[in-house]
Length: 72
Image 1 (cartoon, rainbow, N blue to C red):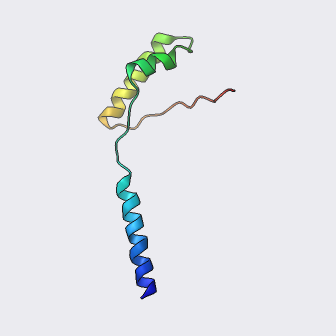
Image 2: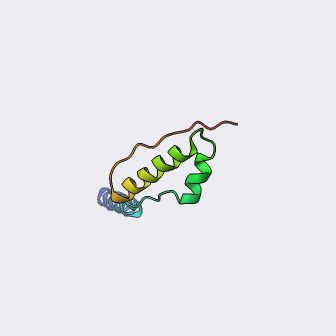
Image 3: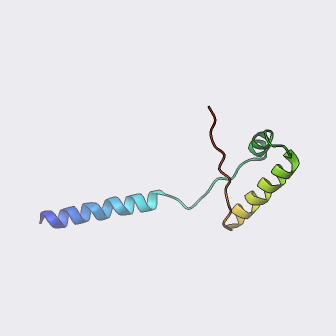
């Protein structure tokens, strides 16, 4: 009896966690792209690349995301 209750509880927790994460992703706004690219050497090229990646992301295509190290 206890094993069945544990199984039901584990199944419920798994389903709750599974359905709580949505498949939506948020893309950057134009202002965020400009602010991010202000630090780059070639601002216009950076803006163009990020806008292309944003459109690919919205179409559902996989993209590569650059990771910039955090400096203190």
